[in-house]
Length: 179
Image 1 (cartoon, helix red, strand yellow):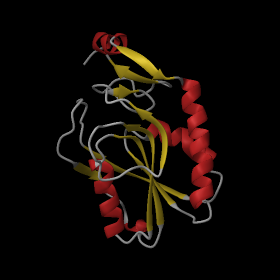
Image 2 (cartoon, rainbow, N blue to C red; image 1 turned 45 degrees about the horizontal axis):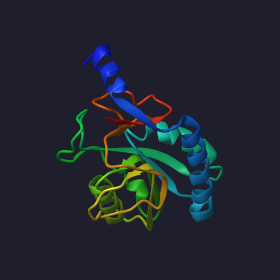
Image 3 (tube, helix red, strand yellow; image 1 turned 90 degrees about the vertical axis):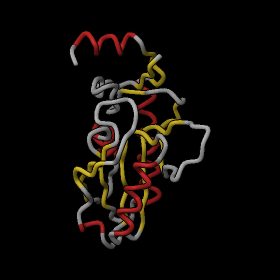
Image 4 (tube, one colour; image 1 turned 180 degrees about the vertical axis):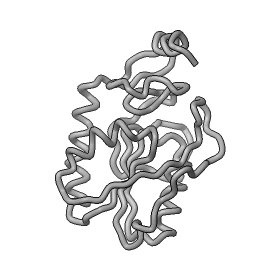
């Protein structure tokens, strides 16, 4: 991996969501989340590392009491295709008896979020909600759909706003798709 490879990835992509559209959508999602669970004192879990940018944009807009922690379940490992799920940081016992909101960058096929939901509910959470910045439109059924979603994106490899392309460009304020 090097700078030239990262630049090639950027050059072979197109912007599909502007930075302004991202911010507007995050504000809309924050209002919807507040209306739905703002009275529940939820535990908010961010899925590392893709959700870090989305989480950083959303959390300051959730102006109600909550607890925050993170989990890390990975399938991609800096590649563009999903593999076996690997729990790097599992949910803690603090999920028991709580409404839990999980934040992630993208819901693709839904396998990762479905595994997270199963684990959290098995650990005794009273309610499970998920919020994603993007949901990929696929022509096949998914095991889960987000409760809160910023954008639907085409069935292409997307990056920016925490999502990476081969480990690069998580830091972009826009969302781009590989050509």
